[in-house]
Length: 271
Ligand SMILES: *[C@@H]1O[C@H](CO)[C@@H](O)[C@H](O)[C@H]1NC(C)=O
Image 1: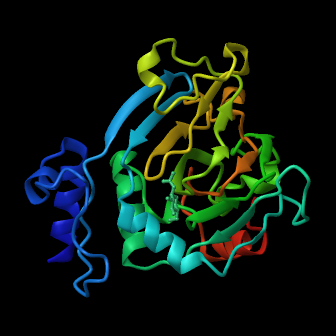
Image 2: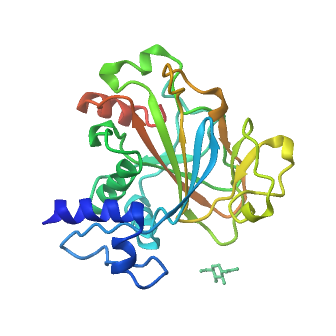
Image 3: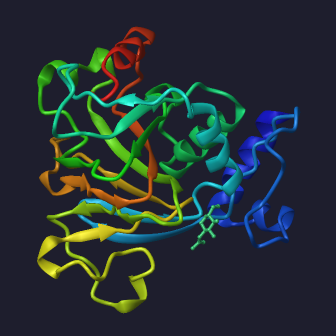
C-alpha cells in the first residue's frame, strides 16, 4: 500500500511522528534506498523561520545521508556547464548543473517538498530536480529565481516560480566559501544561529547560509498579494574557495508544467 505509507510518512515528517517511531536511531538513517519495495520514509527534519517577508525557512536534515549519496551517484557523469536564460554560457554562473532522472528516491524527495508546501500544490507544478556543482572559483552571481520576462512565466508554461528550495547535497570536508548569500535580508543577531548562518560575514553583507550537507533553505519568491517577484529574494552562490559543493534546486511553479514546458527546461537548464 505505497500511497498510504507515503501519505502517512509525509504527515509523519511534519509532526515528527512516523519518522521517530520507525527510527529510534536519531542519526536519521532509515530504510535502505536499494530495497526493491521502494518505501518512502521521510526524515524528521526541523524547520526554523528566518524571515517572514519574504518567507524564508531553514530546514535541518531535509535530506538523509543516503538520499544525498544517491543523488550524487546518479548524476556524477551528467554535469555540464550551466547556461542562463538565453541558452548561452555566462560569466554570471560558472557552476555545472544537471537535471536528475526521476526514480523512487527522487519521487520521495519531491513528495516531501510538496507536503512541506501544503495541500494545494500539485506534483505537476514541480520542475525536475536540478543539481548544481561548484568547484573552486565557481559561483553564481546575484539573481532571483523568479522570472521577470513575461515570455518565461506564461501560465501555459507553469507561470512563475512560487518557491525555491536550495538543498546541500554534498559539501566536501575541506570546503571553504560556497555560502548562499541573501544581501537584502538581515542576518539573525543571536550566536546560536552560527552553525547554519555564516556569522563571520560582515552584517551589511546580509544573510549568508553555510553549506551543510542534508540541510536546505526554503523561500517564497513572489509577493502573495499580487504574484509579483520579491526583490528581497535576490541571492548568490558565493565562490567556493576550496573543496566542492553540490546543491539542489527544487522549484515550484504557480501552475502545472506541461510536458512541452518540461522539455523546454531541459533545452535551457538554467531558465
Ligand atoms: C576528509 O575526507 C578524506 C577522504 O575521505 C579523509 O581522508 C580526511 O581525513 C577527511 N578530513 C577531515 C578533516 O575530516
